[in-house]
Image (cartoon, rainbow, N blue to C red; front, side):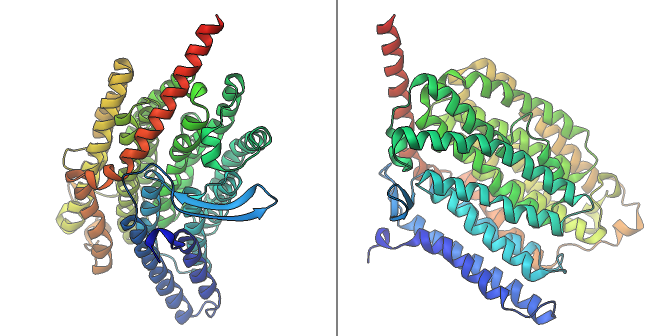
Length: 505
């Protein structure tokens, strides 16, 4: 059987569920049960990553068509179990499966209560996240998109910090409110187009007046998921209260679903509305880049600072997407991939010191370069990648975004560039206060450097940061044809509309 004929996408969805089912049958609250749950979860996430690499190896970079397509009738005549990936979604599948093993390893010693349920929640979450990126039926996409909330709600609500209930409810309510509008839009699209197939809906022409309302309905959901200003306030609370692995997966994958939604739905299905409302995206994104960067400068909690930095970085992503050119969109996708790895690694860096001192207050640290030199090096690499230093993954995405945005609007590009300066300011400020200075606190002085488990955890992340920074074609080649096809379709629709309006006048 050829690679493209194998149901690899179904396997990517099933393997974590098999692992979760196996863990459920382990003995409760015994040391053997806990150990088995950790080992099974780690093994399953590694196997799923290997399967995703097989998917990538068999992926044809020369076509914009959906590949590895699986189609089976599900509900009625129209709603189907329909899966497939193109050059955009395949990279997000790889990102998801790559980050999951780090979440399991990060939780190895830090989570001691209800370990079984914790690992099951993460494996179910992996299935749901992959489902979002491989769904080619709009109802199937909506189910996965919303179901992701359930395990995330439990992870924060059960294993989170002191204000975990407040944070988990805030996450749930914010996301649900936006998604109700999206569901109304999905039902309307299904009734009008008489299909729930995403590839067919991408070629269907919705009336220009209706497009605006549909675009706004989807925007309400994707803006919260990104999150964009001013609906970003759930993110700092969720990050602060979530366990380390919860923050890693939240920053690494969940925030990318909003950007993916814009690329999969807003641009191809509502091109006229996207073109006319790009000013709104630019305005909100620029406020996010500048405003949240200034807020990050004032933070005393490490996690909150990194959370606000994520909002600013996602502002670059939305600006790149709505530049409507190849460089902008490729830069936005690359920025999302890079941010997934770098922000995930930064939260892991916070987790390393939190496990030792059980506080995230920046003022409680200082001088760690003296007793934790290896940690200081890893933290420095991730901090510089977040800033966008040339040679790291952060530079490539930001550079492409700014090239694309400058082509669309030099004013937007110049204002957005201030976010790069502010980003360097708050990240360097954080690093200086934690790593340098006097080692004058007794408990801080007793902290030991990274153990073998932590070194093993960070090694692949460091390699990826430099690989993405030095040789971007590995990832850009996969997305290039799909992005070019998206832009061609978008431009032709916008031109047709402009001509019809001109003829009507």
